[in-house]
Image (tube, rainbow, N blue to C red; front, top):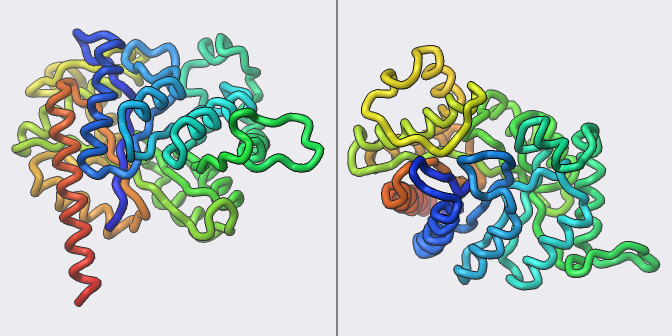
Length: 337
């Protein structure tokens, strides 16, 4: 069966607090574990009043402490913001506390605006050093070499699985060159998706893993009816429009008609960028997911989706898990024929 995972940014809905968002994250992670999700990933963003996962390693530790079997990790850590040694120590500590359950996804973007990037005290050229920083970080997670002067403690020997994240051909090429699993940010930046998959698979050479492993990110807004699925999606559409306008904030409440709060060009832009989405009833979501899987042939699916109401969000991922299990059963039946 195709593995299915969950990406959570700990969204802060309008009318809620960061504390509410973090409690919701723990609750959703426990729900995801019960539903059979393979991984539960959190992402680094800074200076955002709508996202509570800025201290990503801390939140990962909290989620791992309140679950028991699901893998927990970063999707991802924006490495230009950090020293590779510090990240090796953080994730080495997590792997020591929760053996066999921690993943480390790495991205090249700052995950914030340029002013905040300067406040993080990392140089403007750090993104240019990203490939070298990834290699340095991976070295800290392996067993130390004889005479090695700098050792990550904890960290050395933990072999925390490293993933490459990306939304362009750069990440695909680097993942292939280093032999890493690759997750594409198709949930909000899908334009280079097909080209990135092709480049990654064609140029992959064995490294940390022996064969390519591509993870497809898909937004899910599932509900009992198509109309309700479309309605709960409007929160993320509004949030994306606000972000592009430089007015990011808490996750907006859903609306019955998006045209009452956004212009036609804004809606077109949001729909284009968020087009790798499955929206509606279980049957509709299943048809759309089946189509994406048949066309793109991912090795894993990671579902995400910013939904204002926490219970509706839990229900959406619940439907997603049901659909993934049913699609897996269908694939198994076809293979047996």
